[in-house]
Image 1 (cartoon, rainbow, N blue to C red):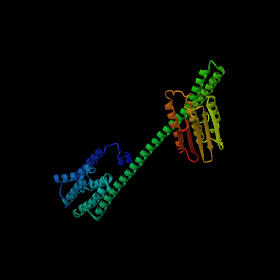
Image 2: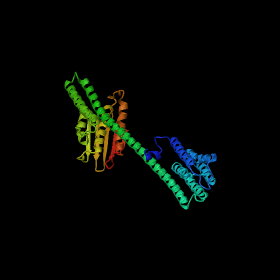
Image 3: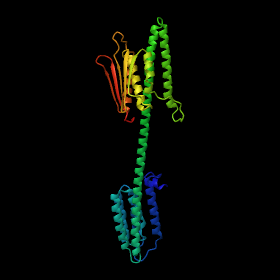
Image 4: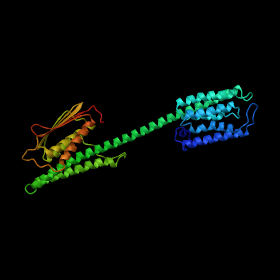
Length: 398
């Protein structure tokens, strides 16, 4: 049997089975000694009292886990009575076992008094033996064995406590690892959901507007209708490419050579703005500062914020919009303004668009929160809407 498992309290055999087995073994050992012992001068022959006292010395092992002090009192009292009656043989090994198991299983405040009482009872038992039965070496060896039994029991108990603490820490660390893994999966799912929302919302808005234009001018301006269909084709292909890229992240996880297109950034804003212009939105763009030569996490966030804000303007705002990006060494400021849809041209909001605007704003808030930035989204006093975002470059993505 693995001693670590045994002293750690997770043994294969239940504690009751172990205690009963040890008690029966001690009873058999002491009974065999009583049967084969030759009475020495000064000792009394065995009687039924001898066997009762012998049983009282051994049987408290059965209850030492639940009642250590009471069990030790009964066993040590029987030992003293056995010794004062000058019965033989000397049952010291049973006391050693009792000291060991109490030190192993009982609390220290119970084990220490039991040990001291056992030392006193053993000393008295040796001292009252008839002349010629014991010697000074008998007393020294008896106390020495008692000390060893107590120290071994205490050492194993301390090891059990340390192993239990180590196992508890391992369980705690495993729980933390699982929790971190769950949070990582949730964060990745939210990231992909934001990316898919940005791509689908932007592309479908452009397609819907161009389809409406094409349907309206199909009979009167076929050339304009062809341009609308071309814009629908270009936008839908770009959306499919972007969605394949995102889905490829999931399908090719763990592959060393995944041929995925790079994520868009501020350098791709001119192409994005041209798509909105082709969809009928007059966009004026101002860039202050230089775009960094290498893409950063803020780069993608800036692109997506502009994309989402212009998509909402295309669906709900006016025919014109202004985009301002102020890029410095410390931060990025993004502002998107629109003048609102004219009352004469205001259209009914299709079912589901309000919910989409809510998801878009939530997506922008989540992106900004990653960098500990600030987002302001409010209606303008003279009509229209304003989106303003401040992204510090010094903060690491959370």
